[in-house]
Length: 225
Image 1: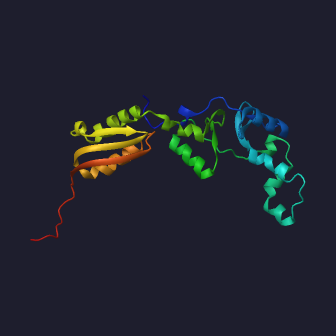
Image 2: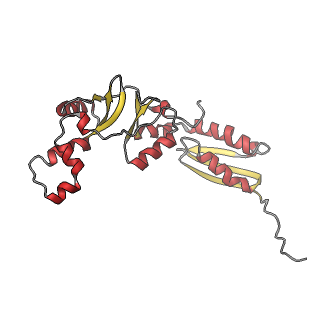
Image 3: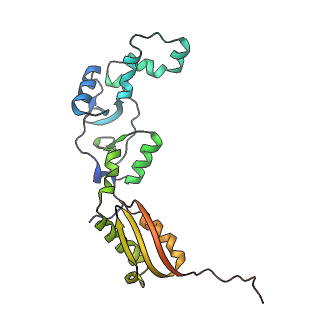
């Protein structure tokens, strides 16, 4: 079983549908329809990613096909109006492309998608050559891990390391990705540490700690003399 954290290269799709800078509008639409994708990398040369063309980039041509926008609307939507008159991928694409490297963790890739509000990221090497593509669905693959795999990793990387003297007394149960910890430990201040470490394991949906023990909080020095 591979150690976590997983990285983008573990889950990305290696075969990518892409178009060149000079691909005409209708070819882009036909390619999207043929391969059932809503966006594609735009490549230059031997495969360097220079942008992304999506359905959102194509729609202004239909939106403004028979409309006569006001001067205010023209000023507010200059980019969309420019795309309405575009005829090639190079004119339509959003650039620079938001990309990710193969060795980025899935958590980092998910954060980029959330912040930049994109559904997929082209995966590129150090010179922006296309290596693959990673989607939101790919990032969710970690939650397909079996409960048995997750339980084994919790025991090996958290329980055995954090509670070596009590590991035999701590019971780990995983059901539908939810990890339950039960048992008696010496230092209850480590419970929050255990929860944080378990939650960081890929595939874990939630953690339910039911651990008991002695508190190591020092006595109040302001008590009776």
